[in-house]
Picture (spheres, rainbow, N blue to C red):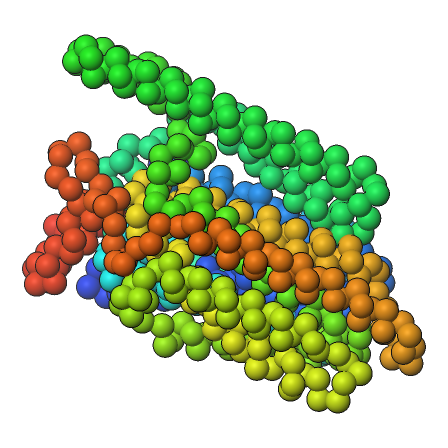
Length: 570
């Protein structure tokens, strides 16, 4: 036997150790949900570890910022690619592999004592690994659940992703004021990621992939187009990150221009040349009804079998472009608010990283509260469009309220920040609770990974834009508690970032006014017609999911089912 065959046999034996009856779909998904949130936990924590990193490595603020920027750069750039790989290789394989890699890289990052450049390199590798989590988590949710249960699963994932950012800020801030500093936070990452990866490797609840997903092959991936898009996104985010220190440098605007050209060229190549060729061949096959020709093309036609990174089919999802664009703007507003306010507390109000994080915490509290009390039936009874516009109206009002805060006004935090942060968190959550299920529940199973990857890529790019603009407006900062004039000048600079946040919300409101209203959570595109001709709702097994009625699920939990489902894992 070859080494590969030996490893494969060993892998099967290990993964078969836990019988199916001892595995739980819901427990598996909770672990997946918490693990996927490690992306934002890492981002939030690293923002609070700024002082610890700067002090330990004796670096300046611009160099230290790359410890966060490098992670965000690679995370945002590789999500689309891993979204496609999720569809091809299977979401559980991509997710568990990524989680193991994150754990290992977190340990290495925690052990680095000298040379911040080395830390930045490993943080960028960690970002690549983290890009595997979100697309595969959404795909697993769609394989586990259908209908209302799928909506609840996606909302749970949203709540974890958006709420964990605030928790990461606080935990990172807490480590920042201890002797162990940044090391403690990355050791914590290592432990949490490692334990989750081991549990999922041994005990994840298996599922059947749709036939279309199984038909996707890695060898058919459009590597040229895919890596061109990845490189283009890397250049765009790199330029935005560089622009945070100075837009006058060619290293800021040249990568952005080149990146945009590369991405547009690659998308045109994929969506028009390759997809256009496929449509011509399909039309030819329909006209000729030649079975032999169909088999020959399926085997030998390289272009016809190419799997592109972003298929044109995704654009036909109802409200996709409007919802995706508006949500990217809301992310821009969100990250601009968070970055500017946390820095404001640190450099204008002269607070520690921990206290600055606590002051911002009402926002994630509002988001979590909103997720807990949200009821989808009520939202759709009112109408999706009305609820989304209401959410943005509340967010705009809260943003205006916050704009009056001033460190020179007594109790400014309690007058102008605490309550509107809670309200804004609630209204932002209302949008997230609606937009993602509205898209993902209308997305075919074989596109779940790539669509969720695209959505997250847009959000990561806008996050990079927000951080870059805040850094540009404020410049390099120092803590000067006794220099009142300096603190006043910083106060004026931070006002600019708040107006940016307000403008982003305003544009999002305009976009939302053009969406097609929906009064039900479901949609026609949930019915995916496979080759057999029978419609099904997000899977191969009808509206009750992969095992039919609840009673039938119990009956199928026998040796034959167990053998089949466990075989799906390997």
